[in-house]
Every structure is written in structure tokens, then in C-alpha cells.
Image 1 (tube, rainbow, N blue to C red):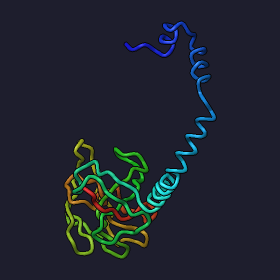
Image 2: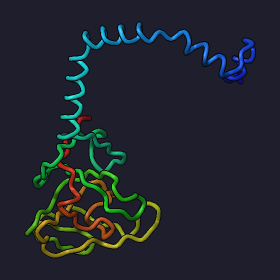
Image 3: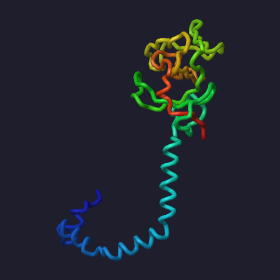
Image 4: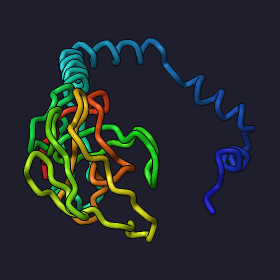
Length: 191
């Protein structure tokens, strides 16, 4: 077990507060200000540029991590505020429920847009005439899964999908149709 700062100070014959006071007494404020000023004159522009770049990136982009095998790719660059088109990977905030808390970022493919018809033939979901996949009756954990809604996607609602058989997407009532307000933006796989 390594000695604590108190133990080390006592070994040196100093009380902990005395040791801190001794360290602080050696601090040369004038020299610190001089060295800090010199450093900032040399590197200040680089620091300001890095800060401006980080703020710009944060306002326009985000990084998303795909922790499952529902889509290829692990790390995604999310273009904030860009509404994805059909076939684009889309990042959105999970509304909550099931094994995930509200607000978690999900990445799925946008398969249906407002005005598209969503039908179900047995377990197979068809969106705008394209068969996407089958809904499973139970999750990997054995919990029952209710099929998602069918009908015409209303204004501001979208159908999201991923080709993996265990993907939790709009085929299930737990996810349902995604509201436009839930979208973060279009996602691009980095690797």
C-alpha cells in the first residue's frame, strides 16, 4: 500500500498543513506570471484556433458509437441538423423504454418518410413497396415484442430500420415511428 500524503509529510517531520504551506511558500507568483505570459504570446493563437475549431465542430457535428451489430461501422460522424434522406444512416434520440434509457443515441437507416405506406404481411414489414425484414415475436432476452404500427406515415414521422435481425427499429412498437424532433442528423460511418 502506498503512503498517503499525510503519512509522507509526517515521515518528513512536517504536519500536512505545514508541508502544504512550505510548498506554497516556494511558489514565485511573479515568475509564474512572466512564464505564463511568454507561453501565451507564443502559443495563444494556436490555443484560440483550437478552441474555435472545437466549438465549430461541436455546433455542426457529433460522434456516435454503434455498440451493436445492427449496422456496419462502429464510429459515426453525425451531421447535426441535417435531415437524412431515404437510405441514409440517421442518428436520433431514443424516446425511452425497454433496455435503453431515454436520450441514448441510436443510428439506423431511414427507410420511410412522411406519406409512405407501411404494411405488414405476417411478420414482414413493407415500406413504400420495399420489404425490409421480419419482426421477431421475442427479443434475445426472451421478452415479448409487439409489432410496430402500420399505415401511412404522417407529417413529421419516419420509419427507421437496420438489416440485422436483432435490430430494435420501427418494426417494433417499442421504437415505433420516429418524430422529426428526435433526429440529431445524418450519420456517416468513419470505421
